[in-house]
Length: 595
Ligand code: AMP
Image (cartoon, rainbow, N blue to C red; front, side, top):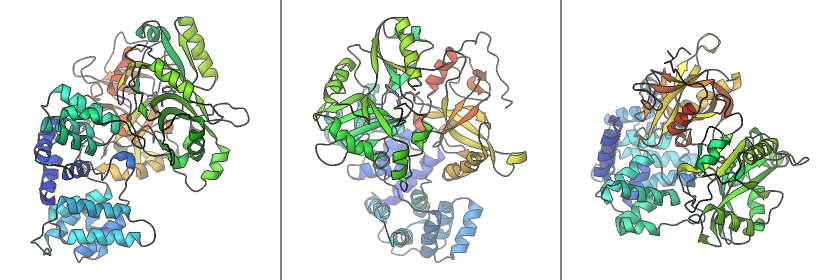
């Protein structure tokens, strides 16, 4: 496939905010494709080179890309910088500059395969001299690029592609392009994807073996499976009732969710909830896991929490977050903040997939296979049938440092459901029943200029929840409280690369922030209650026509949810469940969103 054709499609995708139209453009794009181009195009359209869990990054700083543009267009670096400042985007500037120069070698147009392999070389360049190599590869591509191709190449290496194609839209398009487009086909495609987290693999199987072939996609060590998610209930009685009077209650540990892949030989690999590899942050777990699990290869899931080595007590989560991303003084932090993995599920044991078995069987297998140690233990569990036992187990969990309980279904149908949220798991956290003290993980979708002490920088942020059904982000509050100076100063750095001029198509809100931000950064907030709002769009119309849900008196808790991707933020359905379970909601008044 010619790269120019792909860029023209990118241009059309960028221009439409409508998901249906996006899908039909995508269908036309991928239908004629076959592997390996098909996989490459699916990744490129998402701004990626490989599945997200592989963590392949292009690692090209603005200054490097600018140098490549300057070389390729025979322009002075300072001129490129100045024009970029004016246009606000180096991609746009590249397009303009390229439009003004004669292209070399017009007879050999760039092809997707070649561009993909050159971009991969940029990603692979490491160590001394790698910066020069990156600049050289990019400028050699740019010399041969049209204005349009140049614009997208540069945005791609900077990680600022605004095409807006998301996984869910791609799954829709795959079902239509290579299946019959029905809901059932879409479901089967998503199920295969949830198992392997690899779109290229799913698309390849679909093209070569059809929808029936998808059953051959299986769980494999080294390829993370998508996490199962919990629903909520308003109190413990409701939890038990929903579980038909009998459930396995477990402590809800407040830490980092970890998927541990233990091969027969070779190193253990750990993945976070958003499927990023985090092995380097927990060397002691990597070391210890092979000693604790008897039948390998195995894949386990658990929550990693900091433990006080003197008292063996669970510590606040913030401690463990200190270890993330700190490669240099990891040794020191490792001794200072020891962690423990509380294992609560098993997907693969002795090389055989077991995630499809009912939960009681999985737990029994886990108990047999695991020899608990100081660092790796089983999640505390008790089968509960009476409300008073549920209450006392809950109190015990809180006293032991947990944040509540997760009740798990013991029914025949309690298989592990990758990527699904449902009532097979119900979480119930501390103080949840007394007003709205449960926290919400909101995605930043906009920034508002500050005033007074905050003049000249962001003073507040527009937050959204994720609606997986419509694959969009729906605003629910504008938050400015709870940030200390350091956190406020950090926000522009976190948001910079996601800032865009126009509302991203996947964001819906009745407010207009000073800057739009593509959904990526997740913050934990708390508030007084959920109310109906004429300007916010979370769960629009679900409670009352024309009204969305808004969080009153929102406050940042100080916790950046770096362990969550945008689509793993609190879901619209969760917010609606929270609204419905609020104590006082008889006469809902729309709030004029004054804050
Ligand atoms: P939440 O983070 O509020 O959506 O609650 C679900 C999370 O609880 C999961 O993603 C896990 O990280 C965490 N968790 C802690 N303990 C358990 C447990 N025993 N079983 C399942 N999930 C748990």
